[in-house]
Amino acid sequence: MLGLFDNDYDADGFRTCSVTGLNIHRSAENMVKLYGLTSVVALLVGGIFAFFVAMTRWEAIGLVSPNDFYKFTSIHAWNLLIFWMIFMEIAILYVGGPFVLGRKLALENVAKVAYGVMVAGALLVNYAIWTTEQPNQAPLLTSYVPLPSSADFYLGVVVFLVGALVAALPFLATIWKEKREKPDATLPLIAFGAFICSIVAAEAIVGGLITFVPTYFWRIGVIEHLDPAWYRQMYWIVGHGTQQINLLAMITVWYFMTHVVGGAVVASEKVSRTAFILYLFFINMGAAHHLMSDPGVSSAWRVWNTSYAAYGAVIASMIHAFAIPAGLEVGRRARNEGGGTFGWLWSAPWKDPGFSSTILSIIMFGFLGGITGVMMGQMQLNMTWHNTLATPGHFHATVVLGTTLAFMGLLYYVIRLLFGKDWVAKPLATIQPYLYGGAMGLVCLMMMYLGVLYGVPRRHPSVMDIPGTAFDFSAAKPLFAIFGVSAILAIVGGGLFLALALGALFLGDDYEGEAAPTGAGPIVAADGGGGTGETPAETDSAGDDAEAAETAEDDDDGGLAAHAFSMRGTFLLTLVFFVTFVVMYALNWYLLSQLWTIGG
Ligand code: HEM
Ligand SMILES: [Cu+2]
Image (cartoon, rainbow, N blue to C red; front, side, top):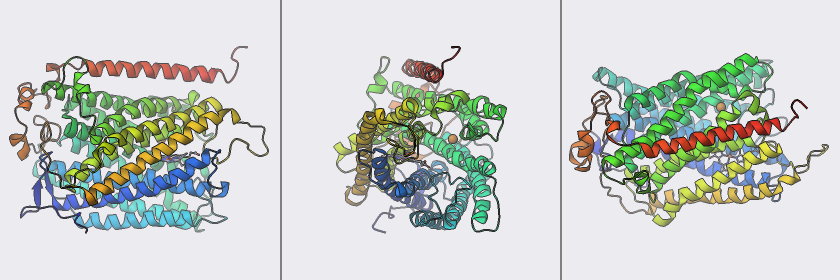
């Protein structure tokens, strides 16, 4: 099709990637391309609707009528948070499994069928939302019972979820075959991360089916009554669960991209794997933060789940956020790429959009998405964030600044390494992540300020003058103006990504890459940690640079002997993060205390 699926493979259907040294089989590659391209279509649709939604919330423009606002917001949310993310995540599973292990994709036909089912579900959801008519209501992301949405919507969701569950099977079957053949070998870190991601995904999807199947029956009249409190609790298994998939996929991409583009190594296999395991046990509890203001569950249940238990996952995120820059620092120091405290960082390939997207994703996810998530997930502070515009401010920082940017970075490399096309308009490609990330960062901050400082509600097209109330948000107008202009810039940045991606695919020169700084080095196939290890690039192209690193090999830990190289740059950055965390936390408590006079 249009020459997009025609790489040269050997008789067994394999080819060796000249940059990563990975052994890629046709079956896996074609599916990654198919799912990846489809996700980009969803990004386009959702992005177009972002413009309408943002320009409605900016009431000076007031683009969409209040009646249509929910329809537009629903299409925006489902295409971006669900379809863009999940199609891409299936592609990431197929990279993390077959690519990294150098295997065929098992059950290739199942992957194709699943793809068809997912597309059918996605189309049905879009159609159902777009044609919503009274008494049905646009579902938004949450489709809270008893708010009725069209039956087709629920059916579409069920179909999509079934498709996504089936799409994970070829990945799991590939891992299973690998383990049968090499029972004693440990999975390489990337495959391990993808595996944990798939388990979390399966839990989320099963939770979604338990929620949406009865809801569908309720909507077509087979079940008479659904308890809204039951729905809310069940819904958030998938509602929050999909965010866990996003998080895990994003972190797996962080490891992969910093390695391939920045030459990062794994500072400690054990630490990184432990962090993935922590997610497995604790991340689900986070779902309870959506019920912080619900009367149906006890305070003890809420506090236990969102604080003590969820911190098990928060700490895992912080471990990764330390381990990845540390791996970059060690890898680059080992190859003499910059000395001093931050030389390794300044000398990194900042003009490479794959690299800058990844690093911006790490930084902005941590500072804007992560810190705010911990704050608003805390019972008292939640009161100042709940159902205000600050909530979408927080989650755009996680799913846009974090996951979407990381996936964009990965796609830049999918274009080069899988489609074999070089980027077009490189100066524009260089600025794209900064434009998108910078503008979107402002959008998120403005939403947070509007919500926490002024109490502007989320999901409401017109707040400057809410009819029949004494509320007056006009003091917030200047912040809305910054929000609106930044949103336009962010949409331009997103559109630029799409234009560059399509431009590269159809007009780009053929890409003949050079080997990555570390070849398929320790991260993809951790030598000590087991894994399939020998990919050709490791011997041919790792080159002299890697020798210094090899001499520092640490046998009990698999990767590099991290202690052979300083990590002081990362350590300082981590301190900056902690100080910011403490200041933000204290500030939010202060703001909360300003709501009521205490002890007066
Ligand atoms: C240029 C990029 C984007 C802009 C300007 C934008 C803007 C907005 C705005 C203004 C809202 C409505 C807030 C409200 O009234 O409550 C919204 C909602 C939402 N957006 Fe975005 N967005 C963007 C990208 C994304 C992306 C990439 C995702 C997901 C990956 C996403 C997911 C959502 C979700 C889930 C909702 C909530 C819908 C609901 O309340 O049910 N957005 N967005
Ligand atoms: Cu959540």
